[in-house]
Each structure stands twice: as structure tokens, then as C-alpha cells.
Image (tube, rainbow, N blue to C red; front, side):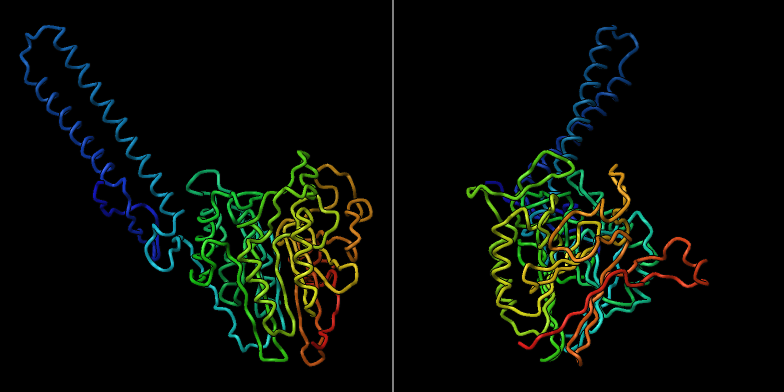
Length: 461
């Protein structure tokens, strides 16, 4: 067995440096490079020999020598191309395999990394939080200015925070999406005003409607950690990006749990219809896995921790009972498992995104509430996709779990807690100024105004 040698694979590590990768193919690659250099030298010697050949040499000798030189040059080009392809494959393998990247925090460098504010300390009494999902980096980002005016203590980014679906093994579009996102002046300013607590959905995991078979999930996970300044040790090893925090002293403790509904999820049952792509699985033999078993165990342990109010973030909707798109409804056993796990716990609110509309939903007995906030930049208007509808009665899905109409303005959610009165309000607010509002209302903006809201009581545990 050939002795392994060390080389620098083009897999960027911390501070933009290259990570040292041990590869058993290094000797073969080195041999290929040596052979290519030898071919170049042979071709050069033959050319020198041709130049020194007497002019009286017969025509056939000249033709043979020219043919030989052409063949050698072509072989050299093919060999160099093979070496380049081999190096590119090793680069991708280095990025995908955590054991191949040196250091405890194998993050991926970025041209435009933002220095987000650190999360609040564990003793901070939380009274104002903003949350939302689905923001295209190639669209205007006025919602960041609205958030600066709103002044939350923390912003929850619930997935599709950028759109970077990969179409090559290097995930070029994903990296570029983060770079473009970080270039927005509003984003740069907001990063200095408040911290963010983020999870991923499909478009920032590198593949639309992705699940456990997503080939880009490790690259996306590392890029996510690097961009949001997350300590690599804080994330579960090879199991997504789920995490949690508890803020405040006893009596005012707020727990925030971020789930990962992509990394270990089994595929949904497809219908082959673009307008209703999924249907709930009814075959008992088909796999149903929304969270990995490790994540289920972790979630149960988190729920056993003391808290006065719990916020659980799922990147996709949980309680919607008619959804034909990605949602927990498509995996009935997993959704019931979640309901059973939450049933003993009081003062729990679910937050979700993904749908490009906002909504309030409630369980059949009214004991559990879900708030969907989507999207920051491109909510679905009336009449989209050729539906030709123009009112909520015509356009909104008939979900018995929903309270009120769907919100179709670009929006975000807010959670405001009054610990003294043991009450909190959840609202969906306008993410940007409505067209014409500045003129109609004497230069005042309606950005941040409440579209829908509901008040709740923190019951005694």
C-alpha cells in the first residue's frame, strides 16, 4: 500500500485558508503531474531536433516527426485535463467529509461574512422577538430596515433565508447567494443592531424540496455555520442544525427550539401534479421520518427542561390539515408523534414558514397554536399562477385549523411578552411600506403595522 502524503486540496477552511487533506490518491495525482511534465519535455526535445535537422531531409521523415509532436501534445493536454478533474473531485470530497477537514470548526470561508451580534445572555428577560422566512437575496431587502425600527431583541430566521439551489458539485449558486445577501447595505446595518437565531429549509440546504438524500446537505450545513458565526461544536454531529436556547430567570423563562425538518427526513409521497405535488402517506410499510431518531430524543430532553413559555420553530407547517405542499401533514405518524410529545406541556407555540403566505392556526381543542410567517420578500398575491381569483374567499385554502384569512402582503411575525401580566401577543406585521402610503398619510410609513394579531395567556404550570 502506497504511503499517503499530505497536500493542499482546494477546500477553504477558516480565515480563507486551505484545509490540509490526507488522500490515498495523492501519489497517483503526483505521478500524473510528473508524467505530464515529462511529455512536455519530450515534445520540446523533438522540436529542437526538428529545428536542427538538415533541410535535405525527405518529406516523409518531416511528416512523421510532425505527427509524433502533435500526438504528444494532444496526449499532454488530455492528461492535464484528467489531473484537473481529479483535483476538482478531491475538493468536493474534502468539503463533504468532515474527517477530511482539519480543525474543530471546519467552516467554509466567504467573501462577505457578516459579524452578527452574539445571542442574548441566558439571564436576559425576553420581551420582543421578530420571526420570518423566505427571502430572496436578489430582491430588495426593506424588511431589514423595518426590523431596525421595530427593535427586537432577537430575530428568528426560519428557513429559506437565501435561495441558493445547487446545480453543480461545488454549490456555486449557494455560495453566491450568501455573498449577494451579505452585500445588501440594509443587511449589513441590521447585523449590527440585533442578533439572529437561524435554521435552514430547502433552498438554503441547496436543493428544492430536499430530504435526507440531499447530496449538498453537508456543504450547506458548513456554509450556514460559517455565515451565521455558529460554533461548529454547537451543531449536532452529522445530524442537521437543530439547537435551542433558554432565556430569562425562573418565572420569566422563554425557551426557543429550532428544529431541522430536512436533514434526516424521509421522502414524501408524490402525486405527479404540480399544483398538488404531495399527498399524506397511508401505506403502513412506507417510511415516515420527519426528524431523525437522535433529534426526537433531543427534543424530548429539551421539553423536559423548565420554561414558562416555549417557542418551537419548524421550517414547514405542522397543523395545516389540507396542505398539498410540504408539511407535517404528509407524514401522519410523525405529526401525531409530535402532538403526543407536546400534549403534556403547556404554554407552547409553534412557528413555521415556507408557504409564502401568513396564517394563524389552532388545534381542534384550542390547546396549541401555530403561526406561519412567510414571506419577507415575495408573498403570493391574489391571482398568482393563473388562478384568476381576487378575494380570500376564492383564493384561500379551506383549512379548518386556520383562524382568519391568509396574509398575502410581505410580512414578518412578532412575539411581545408582558411578564407582569403573564400575557403575550403574536402578530403578523407588514415588512415594507405599502405602495402610495407615504403620500396618503403625510409621509408616514405603514411598515411594521399589524395585519393580524392574537393575544394569549401564560398559564401557571
